[in-house]
Image (cartoon, rainbow, N blue to C red; front, side, top):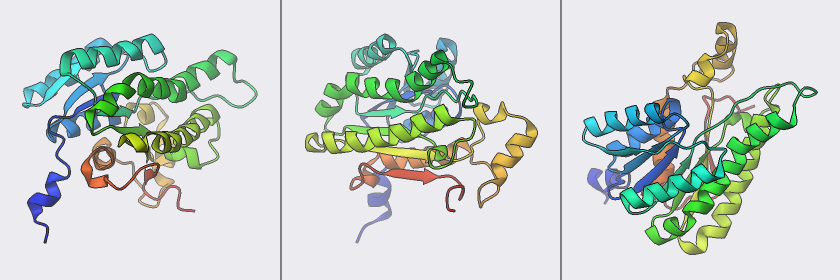
Length: 257
C-alpha cells in the first residue's frame, strides 16, 4: 500500500532544471515558484531582464534555486543563448515549459503580415525552436519533459483572436508530434490549456470584458495563476509518468459545451 510520502514524492523535482519562458509574471511566475518549492532549479526567461531577476531573487530569498536569463520567445538566437546559459550555469536541462505568449488580437480583414509573424513567432515558432535547442540536453537528462502552455481558446471560435487561438491549436498538434517522436528517448510532452486566469494579459481588458470572460465558464470566476501552476507541476513531475501527447484543460468548465 502506498504511503503519503510515496504519493508526495512523485511531485519532487529535486535536482531537475526547468526553463520557464514568460516566467516573470502571471502563470509563468506561479509555475516557477511552484517548481522551485518542489526542489527544481528554475530559469526565469522573459523579455525584461529586471523583471526576470526580481522573480529569481524572490525565489532565492525563500531558499529556492533560480537564475534569470532574459530571452524573447520570438527570437531564435536568444532562445539558443537561453539554453546555452542554462547549461553553463546549472549543468543541464530536464524540463522546458513553453509559457510565453503573444495575445495580439485583430479582426480578420485587418491582419497584417507583420502581426502574423509576431503572433506565430512567439506562440508557435519560438516554442518549437526552444525545444530543438534544448533537445540534446533533455535526452541526456533522463527526465526529459516538455510542457507547452496553450489556451482553452484553442477549442473555441477565437473571435478577434484568430492568430493567437490558431497558433495555440497548432502548438497542441506540435505537442502530439513531439510526444511521438521523442518517446523512444524516454521523453514526454504534454500541453496545458488554461481558461480565463487572473493575469496582466486578462486585466488589460475592460471591466466588462473581464466579467464576461469570467462568466463564460461553469465555475463563474477566473483561475488564480497558482491553480494553473498546479497543472504544470503534475505534467512536469513523475505524477504524470504514464501521460504523453495529451492536453490538460483547466478552464473552469469553459469548453464543456
